[in-house]
Image (cartoon, rainbow, N blue to C red; front, side, top):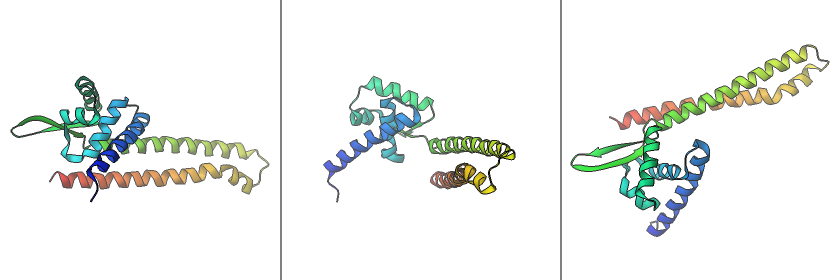
Amino acid sequence: MADPLELIKIKKQLIEEMGVYFESQDVLSPLSSRIFAFLALTGNSGATFDEIVEELEVSKSSVSTNLQLLQTMGRVGYYTKSGDRKRYFKIAEDNMVNRLDDKVASWEREKVLHLKVLEYKALQFENSKLTKEEQQREMGFSTHYIEFLESMIENLKKLKNNLLITINQEQK
């Protein structure tokens, strides 16, 4: 059985590491990133406002401001329990689906650019003295990268479908 103090230490380190990641990837403020990381670790049970303040050791006004930002962005939502006046904040259910859609769109834009590069090179090679083998070598990176992008896009779409199935099962 894991030592409770060790778990707390690991959790704090993970919140910090995830926070830095979300800060750079999602252009979030440092505190918004750490709130999001904490809620990701909390899972579906969520966390109350006071639990977030206590865990992150920051002011109530800072947590309030950053929670509002995360809610406005659609990253965080909340639920209430009957007879309990507290709000329980958690990662918005469609957050991951939206993130996957964003990643697919980004990869697809990149794929279009590489297809245009290949088209340009093919036109360029019409008047070239390069052999077919030399031309294929010149276009090799883009060709292989497009194959990689297609694979990534397909896998992200599969992941999204599996995620949607999981979300729908949890809602039943």
